Image (tube, rainbow, N blue to C red):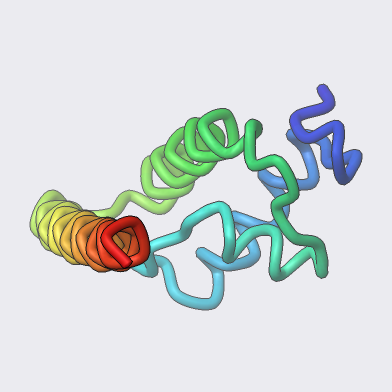
Length: 109
């Protein structure tokens, strides 16, 4: 199934890359940018990213089911993922606040 029409990326290609990345470090946090970088592509319109995230999650879950990962390892992974999301959210908010201030300054000038 074609997931990204900008780069002509299929679901199978994404699954293969995610499994490759998990084989290198089974507890790494994989994001669409990492997958696209590994395929030597880049997100263009990024409209596919929500679907790519779903594929990453499904593939990661299946990988760990097949690997018989322990619950403790999985809980540690989830805490790392939540920490990553918090840091990302904080960075996005800071970026928005800085750009708003710059826009306000130029509007006042």
